[in-house]
Length: 258
Image 1: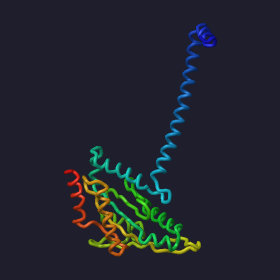
Image 2 (image 1 turned 45 degrees about the vertical axis):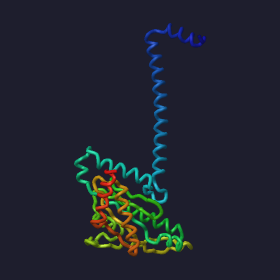
Image 3 (image 1 turned 90 degrees about the vertical axis):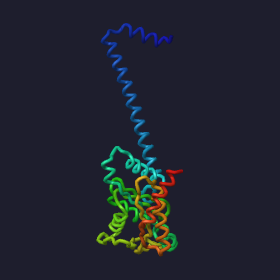
Image 4 (image 1 turned 180 degrees about the horizontal axis):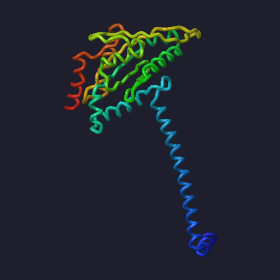
């Protein structure tokens, strides 16, 4: 036995009951302080981890969700909608519109005015789309100039209205069978640093998510409509016609049968 340890035990044996209680109380207080310090360290590590995770799921240029982060967010939204925990709330928000957007001639724009001007356009688009979003809505930069918007509790007509409100045409009324055009000005600096105003247009496709379908199935329909809009001359937003919308059901039926 260590002499110091033996001495402490001997001294403790000579202590009165009150002194022993005081000594044990102090030891307990020291242990609590040590645990509190470790807890603070763990909280700091957790905060750093969450901050790093958030950075990993966000696009550094626009601040939008990147593809990875966006898919995680969509998974959370669909999980809530499919659960029975908030049935009443889910019933009220059964609609969900998926909007696939692509800035027209973006590559040519970068070549003409420079990548700094292209970045400024992307940032302006992101700011407008994210402005005043509701809690469950998401805007995702899928890559390059491709952006996906998910609007919960909104159908394709509501998605049209959302776009026009965000880009300065909030008084425009939706017309059935319409292929609306969106043109909005953005101030940028060209390659020589000269401030200019450019007109930006979109091609896009809107698909409604259906109960039982996956997000990927709905996204595929929106993407097909986006490509159709490009082939049709760009600068137009298309929504799914009945034959397009039926694809979601057939996808789900085939998947369930597999």
